[in-house]
Length: 176
Image 1 (cartoon, rainbow, N blue to C red):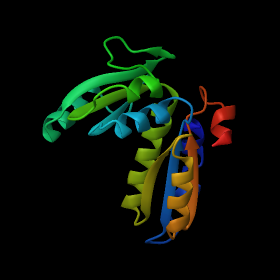
Image 2: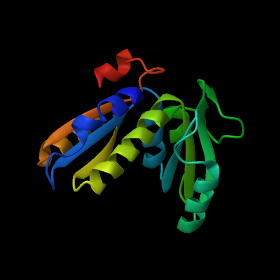
Image 3: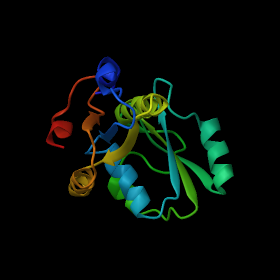
C-alpha cells in the first residue's frame, strides 16, 4: 500500500549500478482497470492526481496536454464519488464507451493515485542512483500480460505496489 512504499524504500534502492527493478502498480478492481479501459479506447495520455495532494496537479496536466496537442479532460473519483465536472468516474465500463482519441485524461484517485505517485518518485530516485526501473500498471484485465512481461525481462527484483484501501491491504489487490 502507499505508506509501505515509503517504509520499504531502502530495500528497493539498487545495491549496484545497473540493477534492474520492475514495479507493478495495481489497484485491480477500479482505478487501474478504468485507466486501461481508457487507453484501450484510444486515450492518448494520462496524469494522476491524488486527493491529499501530490501527483500531478490540474495545472501541470494542462501544460502536458498542451505540449502533446491533446484536449485535457478530468475524470476519476474523490472518496469513491465521481469528481465534479469529470468526464468519467471510476468505472471501466463507463470509460470504454468514450471516444478518447486526442485526449489527455487528468485522473484523480484516492488510493491508486497515492500508490502510483509514490512509485513514480521511487523510480526517479532509483534512476538517480544508477538503477534501471520499469513501472507497469496492473489490473485484473491485464494481469496475464503483466506476468508475461515480467517473466520475459531480466529483472533483478520485482515489487508489487497496490492502492489498498486507506493504507490497509485490500482483498482484491491481494488477488492480483
